[in-house]
Length: 94
Image (cartoon, rainbow, N blue to C red; front, side):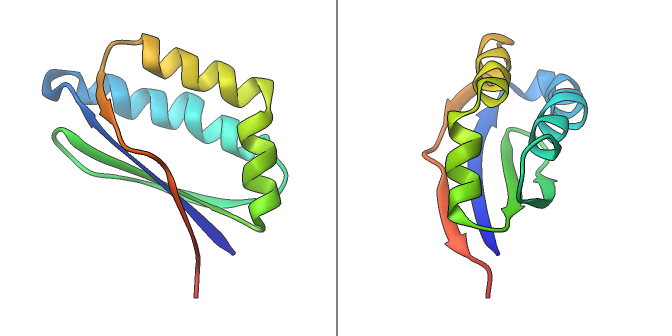
């Protein structure tokens, strides 16, 4: 199993908006893709982390190429609550 760690900083006063987007859009985007094994949305305040789990690195690569995922990324970035994004990391779950 492979974890993909995505971290960001959000506007503190937009936490509820971010949380709703994560539950209603990000999670459904992940669930629509082959190899998705589960996810945790972590944090309070400005520091947030998304930790989806995938069967293989090929599943992550397919996600990143998908139109649905690209639309979801465009939507979250244009929503105005993301202030900074760190590069995503992947790691094997031991």
